[in-house]
Length: 397
Image (tube, rainbow, N blue to C red):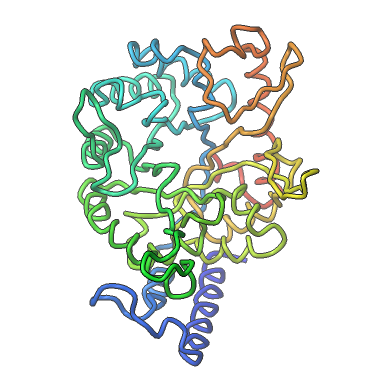
């Protein structure tokens, strides 16, 4: 299936959904601003129709959180250029052509600890000196008015970060890990539980209104904020359908999605993940890659367990095929969050933000050689599965 047929089918599906909702009265109430139409689906159809054809391309990208063990935190903050060189060299050694740099609390560039206006350009320069691309950063941005950090008692806002990002060739800014939480407390007046039905849409509309100024800032600085799809506890608007409702009036070049297939497989293991990919495609500007299993515990609860690529439930070949057919072009960002048994026999959770002075390294349970060997494995799986799904060598960087 080529891109034109993919988008044609998606438009037909959307049109059918619109007709069904019109008959049933779905979205018959306007939960948004006066400028809104009833449901925003006409806008989504226009997004499908107007988005230009682009050659599918995936850029294999490593999340720099998984390379923080190369230095201590103090060294990274005091020596940003040198740290950039170190992580760029290691990313290239692992087989990556690009890197998503952590510019957030506990990150390689922590705006709470240092003047990021100095450190971010220097670290970017160090990374790029190794031939590794870095136009993607992870931040604590939620909206335009929530501070991303506090430095020397003064708040740092999204506008400050986007300005420096633009000036230094950064185009994608991933949002904060936590962003839009539903109010699930009982209604103060009646004691009734919430939100249900229309109350959910009302809260989503409130989230959407918070993003108008951030969209304007991204338009001005020619940047894109990508929101990370996530599996939490059912009380946060972090899934595909929540986000598409929030972003339905937005330009995907201003506000978009970092589609995490691991989290979305947790939510919809067997079939719905495919619909989620198809529906969200116009808003997907980057993808998060990790594998997962869902299992029942001895206590009778259900949980997910992160796994090495290819050993969980993610259907990698079909996922990459859908991305190619949908015309995806952007970073394929690898996340290493599973557990490993280190050299001393102790379990190490790769989801931990390790620095070089973490006890896992000072004890010898983890070493740079061990981590280097471990971090090479998943990328081999992703490249193999993407090639099997029809991605040519020219379509992969």
